[in-house]
Image (cartoon, rainbow, N blue to C red):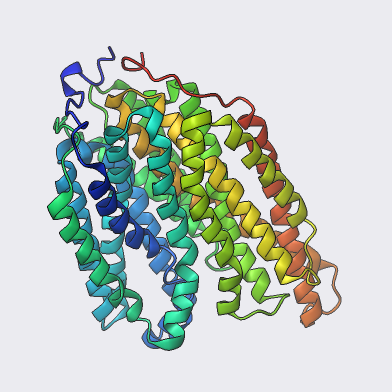
Length: 488
């Protein structure tokens, strides 16, 4: 038995007689609207800039700040879920999220709106680990695929419909309704959880190491902030804010990891990486998140640029892929329970390779229908990899390591999303600049369109490399054997 987590701290609750469906409904409802807010403001930035008289570099803090807070809180969630009950964590996180949403809805200034947004992020950052941990404790390994698939529907479908829903609300009402419309559902989730949600994990109250929290905050927060700041201004990677943030992050993360390996009660247990399937899954999830987040940014830019679509139409063009991804997640979960991960993960990564190959050839003459189909297949492929792979990786961990495994995965998913956006946008911008170097008239609309096309093709060429790596890794995937004791 590993001394890092004493035997008596293992969850002992008998969950056989607990009604699981009301608990799942409570969790899904709350997490859906919290995650929806990650992309709900994407189409509203122009209106918000006009309302509060701020520049694009300022308004982007509504996204950067959100990701930053989530990136800081998720690693600490492994500690918090051992200090507070399931009900306390979920209800507390939902109340914080609702208060932040209410503050955003009535915000008289940009500063107040940003504060409300950061409060929203604090609630969101804690909800996803709570949901994942609850599923791991409620369901035995052979039934987790379907439950995690339902969670995948929430995680993928919510951000996918965010831009489309935002465009419709902005068109018919005002930006404040983006927050007002969420409040009733958040209150219903709180009420439902108060009645039905049960405690499924044991409170152990491990020792709190303040230095670990500081190092974690500087490490993961600096990483998200650094990569999110790459697109600000013209300096890019040479911006002191970017490289200093990344240097502080790397140093802090190194010290954080070394400290966790020495502590008897670490905040984040990195011994989870001794599990081969967990480690393999983590790399696959990083590639999937980088691909998904960067594609959600690059495709709208291309559709509104060379293809000259409106923001609303571009959002609608990407909606089928988001819907199919959400619908595919529960199906993939049930297939995983019956046949294991290989029948899903290997074809899923192969689909990714094929789609990325075709994406490298797109141009201004490519029809919108082709983009809709490619994006739809891309999102289906990602759904076939993410939840089955994630469930398989977590299944190889002992129960004592569930909070740490979920915290590690959720943290790296947030960080990889920020890295993916910065990396692929940087590659796209470099491709544009390289094309423009050989152009006689850089102000020509045709040449600007061609430059963006060249940049997008360059970004997808790198995406193809990542897709091939994912496919090779998927060949080593196998069904996890559920452990009987902690990882040695």
